[in-house]
Length: 169
Image (tube, rainbow, N blue to C red):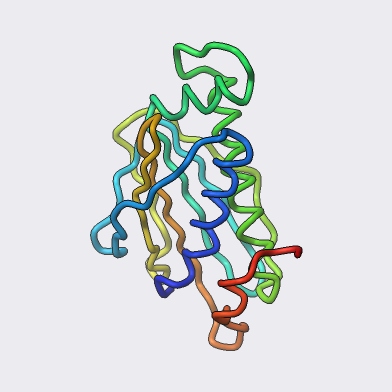
């Protein structure tokens, strides 16, 4: 997987945070598959299948997970509970869905998010999948995005046009 394939996921994450949370996201460090990005307190894992297959991992720091859930639920949150875990899973589902919409040529379907809570933990990708990882920052705390896709050479590759134009306009 090349670094350009993470772009639809980054754009979708930024749109989702702006739309759902009114929260700005700034880009951090881009990591190679050998280095591995950090994983935080609440992590959602979504499988993607189709002409390209793989996994999307979004990992929220505790402070970010609590504030995001409080914003979505319009209530105070003080601990990682079922509501916070569900909110992180739903945000990750929106992020993966938004990226999928930018990549129609791969005809992907999404799994239901699997959630991992607590640190330390590791999300393993198949040996033939080399994820691209990025740390991101918000005023509420950091998060990490990992995308690992196996893209057959016969699958249509995203063009610069697909990566640059807004979806659905």
